[in-house]
Length: 438
Ligand SMILES: NC(=O)c1ccc[n+]([C@@H]2O[C@H](COP(=O)([O-])OP(=O)(O)OC[C@H]3O[C@@H](n4cnc5c(N)ncnc54)[C@H](O)[C@@H]3O)[C@@H](O)[C@H]2O)c1
Image (cartoon, rainbow, N blue to C red; front, side, top):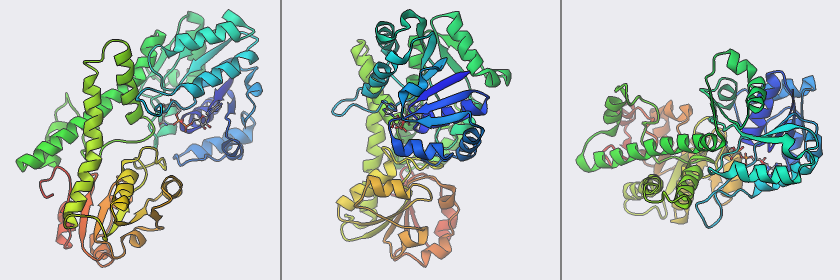
């Protein structure tokens, strides 16, 4: 099957490479010529385990090509829309301009029957509007059908999640559209991946609802951490006890500086904004609280750091270990780690950041921060070390040798990843939200 993937960022590049690995002929289209050049050489423009290998194989076989020319997508049987849907400046709603402009630009090329499949995360009710534009402006008119097939991949596990997803959600309006998508995903379906066939609106909601539930879980556990602090209880033991409850389970139960990245924060806000438009604003207040609790974690981390530093970060040298919004990725979009680092710097600290993968992106996003090439360089003469991304490298640090590098052996574990006893035995003061020690 000939497939186009429009928008080849984290989602689209992974999707294109995985489709090619599943035996399809794929053309990826993006407006960013640097990204296209890099992808055309078989390399991803971001860090994602296993992706370079898939891209390399696909490009070498000739089944996977990348271009800036949308016209190259014209002959495809299926077009996946994978462009960004960020938060609208000055509002909590999703900014759909890239998606709308792609549909407007693609439509004139569609002169034969085909399926246009939305994969970007959108507010419920978006697909019918795009379908109308396609019907009215594509030469093939009604022969162009729309479907929605949300993507649930996790950065850091994107290849694995794309090839072996927990489920496939197919939002379709006809049996032929359903059949086309089942052909696209034939390998995964043969492997037993469950398929949920549904309507467009439910498919759109499936993604934002999943993110809302994950975000709510994280904020709930962060609320528990704050209560633990107030009650002199231990949140790590508490979440262990909760996670052993089979109705709850251990996933997404680690408290810390809160969630970030290119999806959870903006999707939770956009969901609440859309619910408001639909007249469901009062219960959507729950999601606004989820966001408030999440952002509060960053402020609480900065307050705790200031307290450990004797009242103010000003004039202190501070090491921030972690810049990516989570381990396994170089993505720094809305990264809590970088946000905290930037605020500490703005409050007068001399901040030195290290991240195993996200250093270059951190430098670009926050040119004012000093990004160092190693843990030791970042921690040299530090008055406080903050661990703000849950990289294994940080969890496995040797506190004895690091104690010899810093000025003061004080660490703030923003992700609850450090073995506290080992660090304390090496002479460190260990602080963490939810542990009562702060
Ligand atoms: N990143 C994730 O983990 C993930 C997971 C699931 C869903 N999503 C959703 O997927 C969508 C894309 O997210 P992303 O993280 O890949 O974003 P991204 O910013 O990495 O990629 C978007 C790409 O679209 C390109 N683009 C913008 N306008 C274009 C146009 N007119 N024509 C062609 N290309 C254009 C950009 O150059 C960029 O490469 C969003 O809706 C996001 O919420 C992302």
